Length: 306
Length: 301
Image 1 (tube, rainbow over the protein chains, first blue to last red):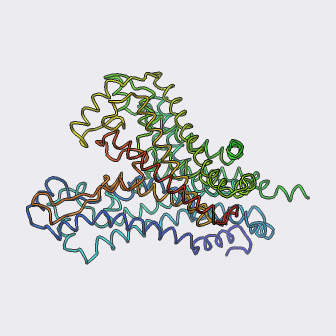
Image 2: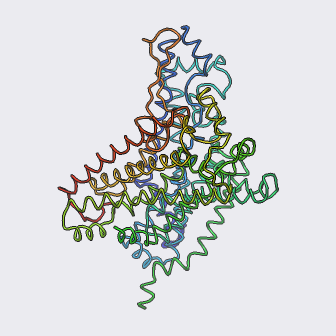
Image 3: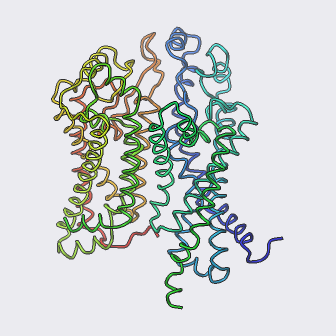
């Protein structure tokens, strides 16, 4: 049982607040709508081609000159997805930290429960909700690609044709169904492992967002900073690895860190998950170290008055 | 104007954002200059030069997507709308029209400074890396230009310089590329201001820029600049048809659409379209200033 007013009970309250918020489900909805548009644009041509020209000379000619024109890059490998993934982690809850400070709501909670409870419940909730939002988006994309497209009865006959070996190997065929999401995942087990990767990565960006939200009032900065830090960090580590030489041991070790996007591009692997866990622990340590500074930032005025 | 710019630049949050985006730009540039293709192309038939790096950087759409647009979007809340500065400006200008011109001038000044800042960073990184400030076209660029002209899209290009650019002096090409980008950024800034004024929310101004950038990125990188459809009315053997939709996105305001596109016609199109869009958006801002509510706090909160 969680003690009333403890950090754990506040954390549970924060998670429920975040999970039931309009913002959380709004982001899931917006991402899904964006990908519905992308996928619709991608499947128009193969469907038109099948229904207007199946079996004709043009059908054969078009299939020879180019593998059926459709999604060649899985959603998870798209630059847009990779670039904007850090936003997903941050947007889940980190913005609430700024909102509460700006409207003064946080001071009521701090007065009632103490700063320590407030700080850690919000910090951890931001991480957990970032992870949950990333998983919710993955489930939404899974349902969209597998049920919405892969098993859609409206174009079942066209899909059966495109999924035959006539259209070559998996790497060059039309990606209907779950293959749209990622080329390498055709099995539920992999998707489940992908959820673990997504949860961990979302959690990492959520924690990073919370760290910035506790010390900055600029909302835009909070939302954009994790992406900039990730890109700059990866680029910086790459630049450092060049100093050691491309084939050196140090460069190879650094490569695991600057290729962190691998944790969500193709559902990651055990090593990428371990690195993300290491970074999450690092964020928690930074959070712990920052606590005394954040207290001064929040309660500086009150302390001075006392 | 100088005081306003100074006031914005002195804001700590503006400086933090600029430092963050500059760091991102520098590491991305180091990734580019350390790229095997650029280095090997330079070693074989001529050296990579600073001015070439400048042209490459400002003609590479992925760079815009991952650095320039991100930075500009980050700075929009600081350069586009500030209720306090707006009220001060209104009081000083004592006329709505003068205030509107002042607001437009502020965005133009910031956009120019934004491009100049990254040009300087490129020159700095390129200078340290290549030590070559020569203004002549290197030999490998001639080879690439010939291959592009002959083979079109199937050519593997090392550096993003459009076909036909080699016919003009490097300084002119670099200048035109930077001018086009500046006009593009001015348009984005003015559009963000207009949307912010109309809706009363800065986030909508940022949202419109994000939306335009995302559409342009998707069309360029994933649809290969064209919308493909099956046209049954076309003769046999030619049913696959294309509509070139990239011209309707913001891509031509910053780069060419395909690598086989000719330099000068696209440059002309980009600059003229950019100026027209700026004039239309500027007129919209003037009209709003004439009638709308000014100096209000942002309704984001």
